[in-house]
Image 1 (spheres, rainbow, N blue to C red):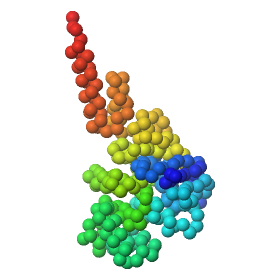
Image 2 (image 1 turned 180 degrees about the horizontal axis):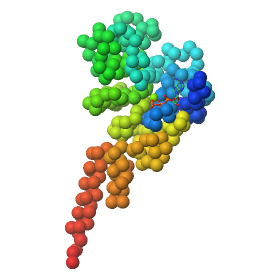
Image 3 (image 1 turned 60 degrees about the vertical axis):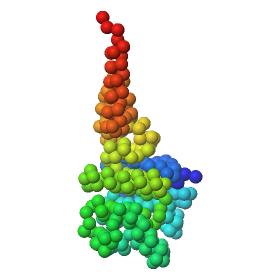
Image 4 (image 1 turned 90 degrees about the horizontal axis):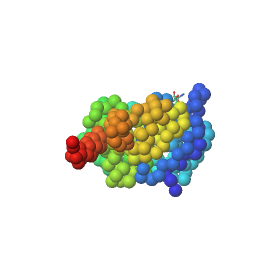
Length: 287
Ligand SMILES: Nc1ncnc2c1ncn2[C@@H]1O[C@H](COP(=O)(O)OP(=O)(O)OP(=O)(O)O)[C@@H](O)[C@H]1O
Ligand SMILES: [Mg+2]
């Protein structure tokens, strides 16, 4: 059974905005997926529906076979999937980091000693040092607030974690730290990871699979490498493939593969093409 099954999902906000319009997709256990698309295409709404934070107006979402809209399943659900908000400040409301990370398990009625172990483990995994436990989350830098938010989600030991814009408002080093940390969770602990992002180099470097939304519908869904070869389609949702991919595509006529994802791959590909040409040149018998 797939971990996440979204079937013909629609979502309309009370003001009448149709944010999702017939979305169907399946995410298997252990996948690393990026959700992309222009502002307002429905990424956050879809993520919140998947995590049971918004109730679909049509269709359904199953997580590990559980219909997330069913009443009284919150406890079962938080052990399966966790959502890290686009803005961590919408998630953090306790006055101490330690309380914040332990809030979910406390709500689940986890006894104190067991809870303490969960908090320490989640904090360690998320890179929140114990010396910060008595700080007020509000006064931490954004990158750390995000880690606290991630730790709070991890403390419930969910199988999947959906992180809405993990790198927004952070410098390159902080962004890579958060992403490397998510990649580590994925690789080492077998978590299913879904990231929502506008940063295509991040998608190219980390996500195996990419789903692009456009006006509340799935525009394209496939392996990241393949998705980025459809530049014309992605333009409909104002997404441009990473620069390395676009350069490769511009040089396709020279024999460069059009599906490179990173600068490193592009350099290797250019070296291959040049070596081939040199080979041809040296084999050339000459006049
Ligand atoms: N609370 C709300 N009430 C009414 N409409 C909303 C609400 N939240 C979002 N919308 C609308 O629903 C649509 C989808 O919004 P959503 O936030 O899911 O998009 P998004 O892809 O996450 O955008 P962004 O990249 O800007 O975060 C947009 O038209 C948006 O204006
Ligand atoms: Mg959003």
